[in-house]
Length: 345
Image: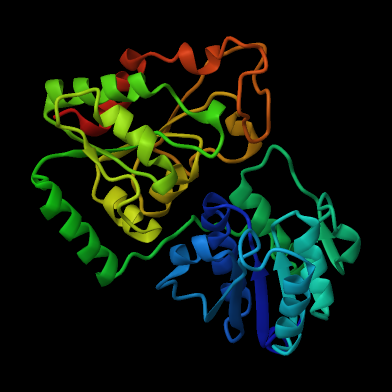
């Protein structure tokens, strides 16, 4: 294989924020295999902030597929835009039909994706999708078609001066004492059944404050503001509510400064991994074996051994059994015990 033949490469990942974070190891792998190639990322606008300052990426394309660019007309327009770029190859970890159609319609000669993808018939090269492997390792397997196997990279994000200043301003506004240990808490999720109980988060915040003087800080997007305000309102003013107040990359910077994060199976879990912060993750309807557990070591997972788990790949809007035991059976006591090695002083 002549790597110098590949001058321009596209990586398409238009799924959620967590998926974009878990694609960053593939970006590193592609750059290592093709060090002289120009690397382009194709993502949604709401996740593009995560790729800011990434030294392995040259150009970011933002496709608003859920908003102003929804529909066939916009897809065809993007095919034309990408065709003019004359890419030599495209990697498509996202397994949607639209992603496959896009790179095919853009006329990219080498199109690499998973055999399980809905649009796999539009790829020139396919690799097996190993269900019980971690998503990071699955994505890196796309490089098998270039005789590269066993590559190891961890997710990485690159908060810069702008994000550091953003977090500094937030700390000043909230009068956070930065000499204290801090615990990030991420109670949200797109899927209702992935969310541990709000009163559980509130009780954990109370106990870590009372026992060790650790500052709890709620993190999340604007969609998590109401949930976070409910949790913060259950205690006497010592929970700092940062939901909806920071960009994604600034949220990563805030999490980087914390001793650990308590989170559901959602994007903040991967934000923490990407900045080297230990994770305590609560898994309910989903299971780590799906491939979305915290990547690496020094993390802890809390889950219940129930016959009904897993009940969904992504979660759902209600418990199909009606009892929601996978979350209700998780106690604040066991969560605090899991957090203690990271925050107890």
